[in-house]
Length: 212
Image (cartoon, rainbow, N blue to C red):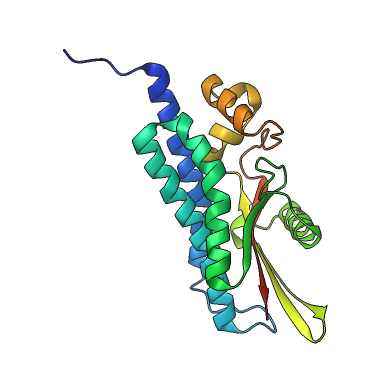
């Protein structure tokens, strides 16, 4: 006897699929930009491409992990995977490439990797100011080379992530997030602040710190 799909489960699956699309859509502008010839002043073009590539790897690998979790265990379980996988992927990529990479938010959900430091706050503030002047989030990058002492330098890179329609399934107005999903998010992230976004607003950034 055929069983009808549970409407609640189907809705949650749809919502979490939208969350996955949010990850990929956030990365698409970055991937396209990597093919452009424009290079930030004073920064080697190969370094520009490699840094953008590392940032893209973080979002791609996390998206793949979430997709696999969705297929195997469903949307609620995938929330836990996101919490555990994102820091692990960031740590692995950091070790592989000799950088420090993470995602930060204008409002923090995962305090293990989402809290911006001083230069990252500056990058987010610049993104918001540029967006207020009409610039498109897809075009926004932040590049900075700083002296760290003893003749050493460090590259700071940030790529803006704007809230897409898909993102609102997990990051929209609290009353609009499906109750089972909202409960799981609250369980995994009791101090969650990453809600209340609207489409087109700055959600955060992928950030890379690289010793030179």
